[in-house]
Image 1: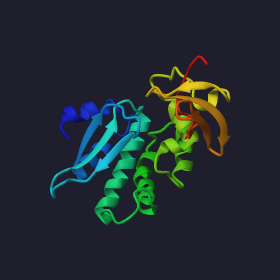
Image 2: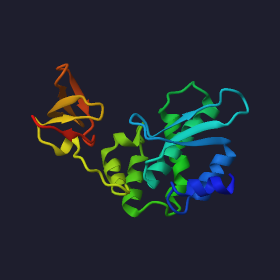
Image 3: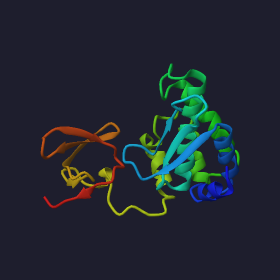
Image 4: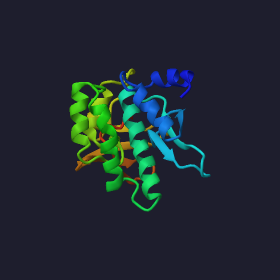
Length: 206
């Protein structure tokens, strides 16, 4: 990587891991793009359209340094699976899990993560999910390291029966918890939806 590119990348990463990340980018011929925030994903991987072109990984700009690194390694695991299997295996199947675990190991062994987050990651990596956001314990731990603390409550923090809005303006009423998610009714369509407990919401006057 060029010195100016490494200087930019350093702003998004935890200490003690810039060289490891930049070496992976160089070795795997990755075009890394830091994007605007996307509500549906933290990052993504795309193979090259033509042989010889770089692999493409994009990461949201507003991730905290630890989440940025974890997401990068998540997408790097997709790259390694594609190199080995192309599109012949499941996106987050056993092959991806094994690569993710393997690629995270050097960071876990290099004192990159604080102890509380290290413990959560070790537990999570025993059987990683398709998104770290699906693991509530890990997500809550990661939120402690956000530079900007959230201003709004989450679904799990509001009372059953509370009316709330989501960013697209749709309005819901919170219902009961079903296993790991909350059942909430859209007030316009009367349809029921399942919400992640840590989804931020905007309470409204009823």
